[in-house]
Image 1: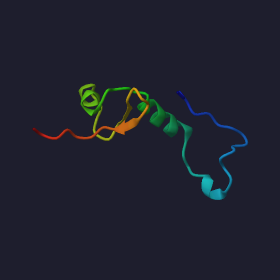
Image 2 (image 1 turned 120 degrees about the vertical axis):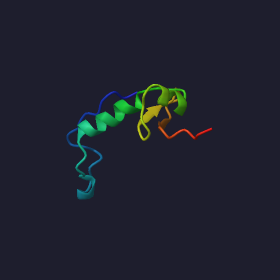
Image 3 (image 1 turned 45 degrees about the horizontal axis):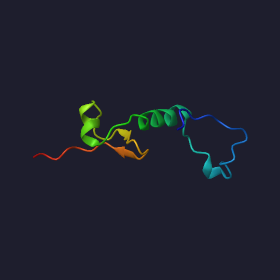
Amino acid sequence: MATKFTAQSPDPNIRTGEDMTPAKFGHLNKILSMTQRVYRGNTQALAAGLQVGELYSQEDGAVHVVIAEKSK
């Protein structure tokens, strides 16, 4: 699993001017670090202190967004 984004020069994915967006590696690395938090599911992620809207992964590598639990 990737742990950090690094720049390539020349970048093989930048082919047109539209590909040059203002994304910063720090932003991408933050997203990547968020997806490396592994929980069995939404309930466990909330119990660990994650907030609604944050990202986490499950053991199979699937990335999920924390959602609000329904009231019982």
